[in-house]
Amino acid sequence: MDNKLKGKIKWFSKEKGYGFIFGEDKKDYFVHIKDVKGEDIPQEKDEVEFKVIKNKKGLKAIDVIIIKKNKENQRKKLAICQHCGKEMVPRVIFTQGVPRGSICPFCGKTYKVFKASEEDLTAMYIIMGLVLFFIFFVIMVGAFS
Ligand SMILES: [Zn+2]
Image 1 (cartoon, rainbow, N blue to C red):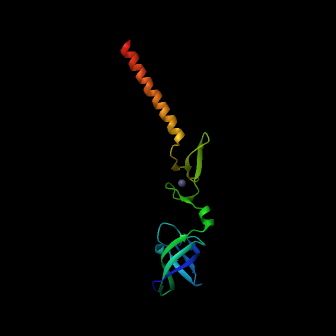
Image 2 (cartoon, rainbow, N blue to C red; image 1 turned 45 degrees about the vertical axis):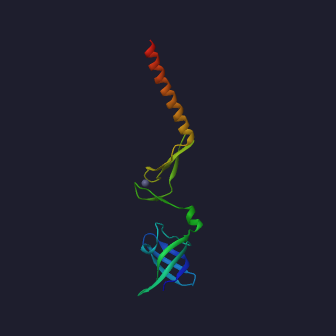
Image 3 (cartoon, rainbow, N blue to C red; image 1 turned 120 degrees about the horizontal axis):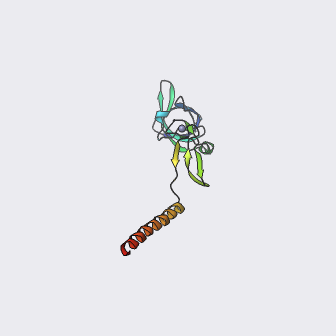
């Protein structure tokens, strides 16, 4: 069988690494994480496309591609902390009302540092300009005194 089928994830256990797809032909297909393409972990109601093979245990989905994430799942999309390895929703931290980055709510370590905004860069250039002018001024005064 080489035909592609479409279906929806019926359930998927991240811990166990497998679940079932409810196919458009109203059959259930076993799906293992290693047969899912890409880095995404399937979640309930995600729309998928897959091929079917038959093994001793029954029908099995392979070459599974997630074609559409369920919107509910998208909203609660979690990040994985590089430090403690937990799944979490990064907490944004502010400095003087400006978002500076996000941290892991479990271990408190930095998840992401936001790039400096254009305003920050402009301020930096002005300060650098003033410093250069001051140095130039000091040299000039030194040269003529
Ligand atoms: Zn963490």
